[in-house]
Structures are given as structure tokens and as C-alpha cells.
Image (cartoon, protein in one colour):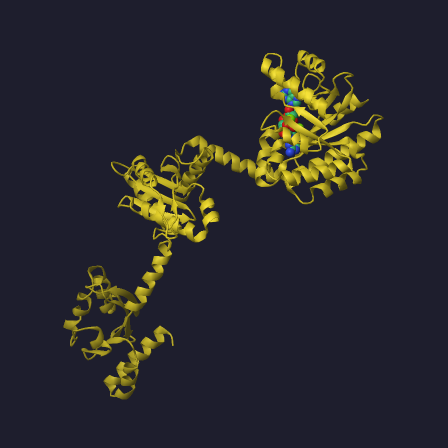
Amino acid sequence: MSELQYQNDMLKAMNQKLKGNEGMYRLVCETSCDAFLYYSFEKDEVYTLGRWSEFFNFEIRSVNDLHLLYDIMSDFYVEKVRSLVYLEKRNLEKANCEALNQNKRAWYSINAIVEYDDYGKPIHKLLTISDITKFKKQNEELAYLAYYDPLTGLYNRNYFVRLLSEFVRNAKEDDKIVDVVIVDIDDFRKVNDGMGMVVGDELVQQLGGVLKEFSSANVIVGHINSDIYCMAIYEPKNDYTMENLYQRLKSRLRRPFYLSNGYEISITVSVGVASYPEASKDAVELINCAEIVMFRGKSLGKNTIQYFDTPILDDFIHNVQMDNKLKEAVTNNHFMLKYQPQFYADSKELRGVEALIRWNDVSEDSVISPTVFIPMAEKNGTIVPIGKWVIEESIRQCSEWHRKYEKPIIMSINVSAIQYMKEDFVDHLISVIEKHDVDPRYIELEVTESVLIDGFENVAHKLTALKEYGIRISLDDFGTGFSSLSYLKKLPIDTLKIDKSFIDTVLIDSPTRVITESIIKMVKTLGFEAVAEGVEEFKQYEYLQSIGCDVIQGFYFAKPQNVEEIEKLLQ
Ligand code: C2E
Ligand code: MG
Ligand code: MG
């Protein structure tokens, strides 16, 4: 039965009573859980019925007592209830409200309904009062869960954002500052992975307790997720400035946390701060900005506090835009290959070319260097399709040149660590070589050390398989990074490329000269081929040739070139 139907039936029953049909009225009233107040305008008579005496310790005998019903309500609700009691004064047929009593122990839901005659004169009215205290309590518990994070007892993310929005609104009106702070436990994953999630949770809970102590009328503290907390300081001053809170936090963190399994854990945190109105005027954006600077702190070695400044945001926005643009470039294939020739030092004959990718940024009408976008592509995963395209296009081009020109040249291809990780890397490469019918001895893969650092065994295994198939392997940028000599022994290397940084100073710096000469000697002993990268001057070339370097690549001979320019060379 709908609420309104119920009210109407009740009103009719009351009316029946007045007409003498008491049986029906009693039945309805006694089976109800509500209290009723009935008033007949015609007869100027008031009746209280149902659970009235259980709900209230007063009786209403005439219209003069009606005020008792709103007098017992707590201040905020008095007027609301009063206007229900005199609903006919507003010419309304029905209305309802919820109200809390003065001692704040009981909640009521009150429905009022008035019936009018054809001329708009009120005939009678009924107030139906339900006790909703239990229901309200349950709601409060639910509300707690809606507002608080059960693990730490701090505000949860949603509620924190609401409160922060209020801070921001007030700050706008009062021309104040709000500091928004992100706190993140350093190396939390090690705790979670090493000791288990239960221990991780306990640590999060304990640090939550520490941060909770900072809360005050002007400081709110929330738990965003996992090991990330957020605080906001309204009008930072005196004891409640970020510097002050950070020092307090750090001094607490000098002591370890004691966990219930008997462990002691010492932690550090990374903190990022972004302020209204400087960083942003929007609550969620402020949190994001604080998070961005916190992550910058992590990348700078953790255990720091970082403050937002505009260049960071510009950088961040720029990176996000570039990221999206790069994904678009992959979809629309806005890449091209340049080819930088490599010459034998003695004969000056063309040995081969290195394929070097370029990104045609059509929106800016510019060309973006691989040193800019390859690291981005490695991060966002687009290196996989990009790398596949490079392999396909360079091998296709190589095959075309082999068919068109008498002397076959070597095609050197740069391959990124992530490409090697892919299960199908070897199969894919071989299938492309077979599709274009190229002799694998003319395909050379350039490997950098970064490829070898993680998962050396896996990569070494794949390189060996490729080498057995006939492909050449070249170690790129040798001399930068760790340049572990053990790689040279364990990897099936054919060529070693001495990095440009050596070539740059080899003529003016004697230690560099000694090292370069030893590298070349070692290369000879191991039976590899030595390639010098970044040769820009005749004198460098002359010197490198004199110490036995086999191959020269660099601007002195040629910059990376397009297909037509290479074809001129081939002719
Ligand atoms: P890298 O493999 O060491 O390539 C040599 C880089 O040195 C090229 O830069 C080349 O243009 C530049 N270079 C060559 N000779 C000279 C010289 O005499 N003077 C100067 N100043 N520079 C010279 P580029 O093309 O900008 O490529 C930079 C790096 O980007 C490459 O270094 C390589 O690590 C990466 N890269 C290029 N293409 C690809 C690709 O298709 N896939 C992957 N994974 N990486 C690529
Ligand atoms: Mg290279
Ligand atoms: Mg190189």
C-alpha cells in the first residue's frame, strides 16, 4: 500500500469514527506502528491515536495544545514541524518532514494531509508520525562508511574531496590559501610484497593514526588509497604550516612502527604540496598537482618534500599531450626512416646504413627526434608497434636495394629492450626477413646495454638463436653505461660501436685516447668489428683509421639521409 493511500485510508477511518463507525477505525489504528493526530475543522475536535502514548508523554486535547508537538523538537526543526501542523494555512493538501526531538534521542517522520471541501474550506487533517530513530542510526552507520575509510578511520577519498572543495570555496571568498598535501610511503611495495598485505595494512593504519593527530579545525586528513594519504591545510599559519607538519612527521618517522607480528618497520615518506590558488582553483586538480610533485620527489630519490611550481605542471601537461599524440602517430603511421651510411675506414667503401627513425609531427609540421619519443614509446608501450614497423620497413628497403644494386649493403636496426622481451620477437623478425627474401647476413641488430640489464639470460638466448640464423649482432653505444666486459664474452657479438662521447674527446683527452685504443685492441683480439660513431672531423677519422678502427659513421661522411640520397651513393 502506498504511503499516500495509507494516509487517505486513515483519514477516512478517522472520519468514520466521527460518524460512528468505530470498529473500522480501531482496526486500522491498532495495527499501525504510527501515532496519529486527527483534527476535524467542522467539529473543532482533536484526537490522538495509535502509538501516541508510547511516543509522547503529553496529550493534545484541543487546538490550543497543538504547539506541544513542535515545542518538543530541537530548535532547527521547530519551524518545520509547526508549518506541518498548520498545513491548511499554506493551502496545501499534503507535506512531510523529518524532525529530531530536543534531547536528540528520537527521530520522527511526520506526514500531514488536509482534505478540503468544494469551496476550498478545510474539512479535516491528519498528522501521521512514525518513529524513525532506528532507521536513522543505520543510516548514520552507512554514512560513516560513505565518509570514512574503515582501515584508517580517516576521511575517504570522496568525502575528502567534498571537504576540500568547501575549503576552496571559503578560501575564494575570504582570499585565503589552502595547502593540499599528498603523503606516500616510500617503497611500500616492498613491505606489501615482502611481509604480506596484512602487515602492509597495519602499517597504513598506524601511519594513518600519526597523520590523524595533525587534524584540526583547519586541517583535514584523508586516506586516498593503498599507501597514499591526503591532507589540506586551510590558511596555513603558526603551528599549522606545511613545513611545521612535515618536521613533526619526520621526527615521528625517526622511530620505527611496531607491528603485531613482532616486526619493527622504519619508513620514509615522499610528500608533495600544491596550493590554492597558485597551483589550481579546483579541489581535484589540486590533489592531482600535489600527487605529480610527490612523484617527482620519488624520482629524485624519495624521502623529500616537493612544492608545486608551474613548470612542473607545464611539463606534466606537455608529457600527457605528447603521449596522446604519439599514440595517434602510431595509428596514422606518421613515422619515417632515415639511413646513416657507414664506411670502411681503409677503403672508404660503403659498408651499410643504420636505420634511424623520425616522427613527422603533422600538427606542428616538425620532425621529432627519437631521443625524445623512443623513451616515451618505451613507457607507454607504443614501442612494440613502432619497433615492428621499423623492422618491416627497413628490411623491405634493404631487400629493394639488394635487388636494385649490385653490391649488397648491411642494414643496421636499433631494437629496444621491450621488443626483445616479446615472446614472438625472434619468429617475427625471421618471418619478415623471409617475406622480403633477404640474406640474413645483411641484417644487423643494434643492442644497447639497457637491453641486457634486466633478463640477460632471456635476451642472450634470443640473440644466439638469431645469430645462428645468420643475423649480425652489434653492441651499440659501447662505453656508456656499465660496459661490462662479461657481456662481450657471453654474447654472440659481431660488431662493437664505440660511443660518440669517446670520439668527441679522443683527440684532446689522453685518458680517452688510451681507453679508445684499448677497446679497439680488445675488439681485434676478440675478432669483432669496431665501428666509431659520431665522427665529425677529418682528424678524428684519420686518427681512428690509424689505430685500426674498421668502420666510420658520422657527420664527417654523412648525416642520416633519405632513400634518394642513399640511392645516389649506391649508384
Ligand atoms: P644511436 O643508435 O646511437 O644512433 C646514433 C645517433 O647519433 C643518431 O641520432 C645519429 O643521427 C647520431 N649521429 C650520428 N653521427 C653523428 C655525428 O657525427 N654527430 C652527431 N652530433 N650525431 C651523430 P638519432 O637519429 O637522433 O638517434 C638517436 C637514438 O635514438 C639512437 O642512437 C637510437 O638509440 C635511437 N633510435 C633511433 N632510431 C631508432 C629505432 O628505430 N628504434 C629504436 N629502438 N631506437 C632508435
Ligand atoms: Mg644505433
Ligand atoms: Mg649509438
